[in-house]
Image (tube, rainbow, N blue to C red; front, side):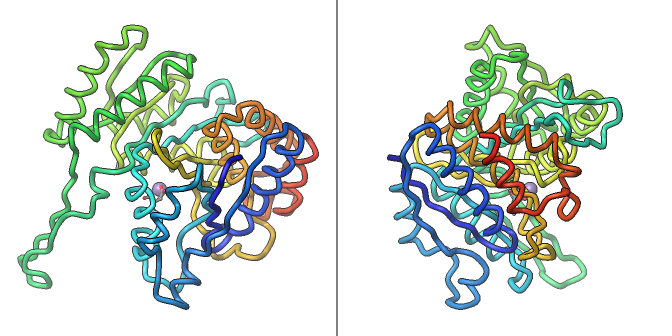
Length: 348
Ligand code: IPM
Ligand code: MN
């Protein structure tokens, strides 16, 4: 019995989560796996009502689950940063979800802004470090408000944190068994301390993986190649900040925020799965948002729970849906949010 905590969150989060759960239920009926869900109302509305974002006791409670399914975080009436840090980052850090796994896969029938590129060219995975770097929130203002003000933001990279991420990336590249090629994405020419450590660790760990071809590219070059020759990539490993940026680029070349999913993984603990787009306030409640990213997050969740068969089955069905839909963009799909969920269920 898989115990799944569900956090629909803000904006369109609840709508897409509902479709994800609809598909999860249908897949369980088809393949026979058992699960139970517990709903949590964390997010902007609860914060506005109670002043509470994510109490420490709830974080502890979440450790008893096998997985977390998250909708979206971010509310137009709440100052930016409060929910992002108090909910999303608190979950990622508090549950030691040190990997953010973000596949960049163009499904058949999905429009990509890259001319002359198709599903055979756009199929790689980004392994983003998820607990360190610039996201630790360390820093200070000196002489705040004055003409000579200085703002300092620290990127903290520990050998332990970098090594476990790099090791995960090597193992993942081996298991994926596609190009057996792992690219380190950094900025060793400028961020000499942070990526000096990353590069040394990467090269050390590489010695244990003679079956994996390794290479290195600066983050700016990675952006260039993701657009020009995405087929070069198999797996990319990078730090938290660069990972945040290049995965939005990745999402766009795979058809947009409507289809991109990710997993915040603690390989020894509780992992959390989410559509990577935001809460899209302007589409909230209109039944027009694309739920496929949330449904794809369910496939990643099932894979991590050991339900590979159900996961593969849903992915096939997503592909059936994408070939029928007019667009992946909200309001232009040719179907409503609920109808897209039904379409995936129908093809299971
Ligand atoms: C993401 C988001 C978050 C991040 C924000 C909401 C804090 O952009 O999941 O990529 O920067 O990690
Ligand atoms: Mn992001």
